[in-house]
Image (cartoon, rainbow, N blue to C red; front, side, top):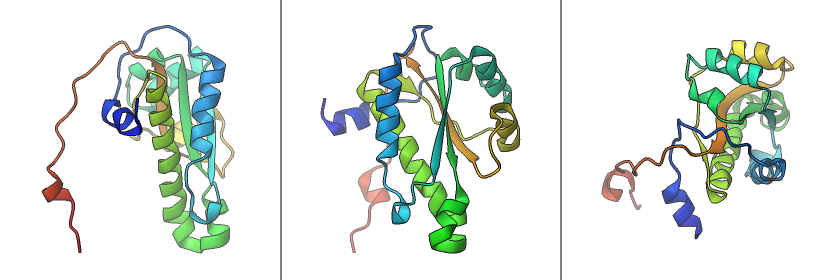
Length: 171
């Protein structure tokens, strides 16, 4: 599979098989996340790998009842350490760069999972404070996104994309 094949094949998966994901595969996915670009190489991320079923169920409540979160055997919660970025970039690092950097890491997680034939779904709709409580996060780790990771139990068709002339301007 080429890189563009992986990009085009990735879908938001909301139904998972109960099959476990080997630890070495999760480690490979996290390695891809660690190699994401970051402003000033600050790497302001921290990844929480949630495998404990009760905690995954609690994340369902945090995520507004999206039950598929607990279906997957693994949930990765991507957190930003805003002050790590702010040390170099002040408010712009604190309020923008750390979020961009964690988004890049999240994208790498999703593409690496797809490359291994696994499904993910970017979840940004959740209560940050409640998520922090469930995971007992340190105050400097802001949960930005989470994704279940598991064997796909659905294979949705591609969704429509806007035409290039509507989204690209050459100057």
